[in-house]
Length: 111
Length: 116
Image (cartoon, rainbow over all chains, first blue to last red; front, side):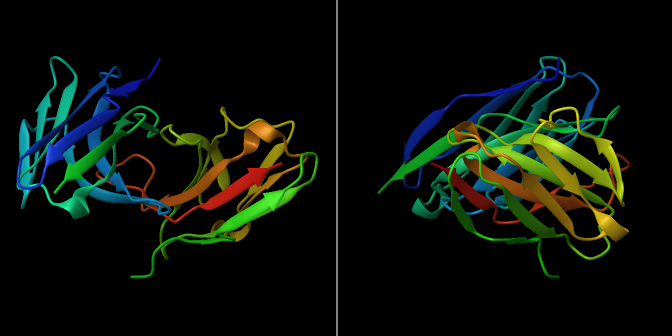
C-alpha cells in the first residue's frame, strides 16, 4: 500500500544546513509536499515539488527529488532557532488524490 | 484570505460520551478533509468530501465516527461513544481541487481531544 517514511529526529547548530529525508512507495505520486508543524498549531505548507522536477529552490529551502529511488529531501540553509518544529513529508497519489503523510521529523536547532 | 477555521480548540470528555467538532474551510475550496493526528504520528485521513459528497471514508471507524458536510461548505465530525484511543488532534483541511493540478491542503489549527 501507500507509505511514507521519515527519520524521526534531527539536531543541528544554528547557522548550519539541515537535511530532512523522506521515502515514499506510491510510484503514482505526482506532487510531494513539505509541511511544518509548530507546537499546538496546524500544518503549514512550506513547499512542494511536481514529480517531473528534480529540484526546487525557494529562498532558504531546497527540495531534491530522486523519482527512481522515490526519495525526497528538504534542505534548510542557515537554519535558525525559529525553524525548530516537526517537518512532515506528504505524497499525493494521482489515482486517488489521497495525501499520505510520513510520521514527521523533529528538527531541533541548538544556539 | 481567511484560513481554515476549527472549533473548539480543546475538548476533554469522559469515555462513552459524545463530542462534535466543527470546520469552516477556505472560501471556494471544494474539497474538505478530516485527519486524525495521534501524538508522535503523522496525520491520518479519516474522511474526504468533494463538495457535499463523500469521496473516501475508508479509514473512518463508522461504528462510532460520523461526518457530514451539508451544503458543501462547513463540516462537522462526531464521535459517539468516545474511547480512550480517540485522544488525538483532529485536523480539518481544505483544497481547491481533489486531484487535478497542484492543489495543496491548507490546515486549520486542529481540535485537541482528550478522552479520560
